[in-house]
Image (cartoon, rainbow, N blue to C red):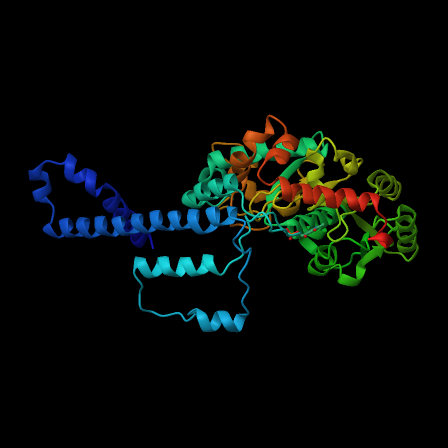
Length: 441
Ligand SMILES: Cc1ncc(COP(=O)(O)O)c(C=O)c1O
C-alpha cells in the first residue's frame, strides 16, 4: 500500500515538476536519467495540456450556458422533457471506451441544455435559492482545493474561516456562548438536534441506545417540516412518537395545545424530550410564537429546538427580525443559508446553546484521525462534533458570498442584489403569511 502511495506521489511530482526540471537541470544531469523518463515527462505534459484545455473549455461553457444564459429573460427557465424523451434524445449508456475532450464538452453542453436555469429571474423554489455568482466563485475554489473538512490539518484555513463565520451567524441567533456546525442540509441539522437533546437528557444512551429508556416523545406543529417525523423514525423514537400540535389560522403552533400534549405525555409515563418550533414553516411561512413556546419548554424541562431552515434568515433583516423574537431562548437552532440567503446548495448550520454538547454527543475514540497531542487544540477537528467523517467545507462559500455583505448590511445587500425579485418574493411570503389568515389565502 505504501509502495503504491509512494509511486503515485512520485508520479505526481514527476508530472508537476517535469517542465521546471528540464529547464533547471543541466544537460548532463538530464542525461543521467533513464531515457524512458523523458518520454514519461512528455506524455505527462501532453496529458496536462489536455486537462487544462478541458478545464478552460468547461469553464467558458459554464459561463455561457449557465451564467449568461440565466440572465437572458427570453430563455425558458426549463425545457422540460419526460424521462422517456431524455432517454431517447441522450445516451445514458456507460461504456468502457474512453471519450475525447470534444465529446466531453458535447456531453456538458447537453447537460446544460436540459437542466433548469436556476439563475433565471423567473426561477423560484421553496427548497433552494438558485445561482449566485459569488457562491459559484467560492465553489470553484472549494472544488479545486477538494479538501475533506474533518480535521484541522487537512483544511487549516478553511476550518478557521468556517468557525469564524459560524460564530458570526450565532450572534444573530442570540446565543451568547454555544457552538455551531455546518451540516449537509436542514433535515440533518434537525436530526443532530434530536440526538443532542437525547444525549443531554440520557447521557448513557450514547453507548447503550434506547434500551431501558422510557418512551421518548417529540412535538412539532401540524405545519412543521416532515423532517421532524423522519428524524424521530431514524433515531429510533418512532415516527408515531412525533406529536403534531394544533396550529391557529395563521399556521402557528398554539402554545396551550403544546402544553396540553406535554402534560398528557407525562401523565402516560412517557418522556417529552423535545419541541421543534418553526421559524418559517415550509408551506405557509408561519413563525411559531417562540417566547410562549420557550415558557412551556422551560416549565416542563423540555428541549426547545427551532427549525429555522427556511425562515431563520429573517434574523439578518432589521425589518423582519422581530418574527424570530424569542429564538435566543431555545436550546438549538437550525438555519439554512442555501434557502433565503441564496447561498449554493447545500448549506445548513446547527447551533447549540450549550458548548461541548455536540462533541459529547458525536465524538468517538478514533485514534487514526482524532489523536490527542496534536500541535493544536483538538476542538479544531470539526469531525469530532459531527456524525459523518467525509465533509465538504462550507466556509469559503460564506466568506466569498458574505464578506461583501457581512460588514456592511445584510439587508442592504439582499435588497440591492440582482436577486432583488427573488428575495422580495420570499420576504413577501413571510409578510403575507403573517398578515393574512390561512382561510383567506
Ligand atoms: C422548515 C424546513 N425545515 C427543514 C427543511 C429541510 O431542509 P433540507 O431540504 O435542507 O433538508 C425544509 C426544507 O424545505 C424546511 O422548509
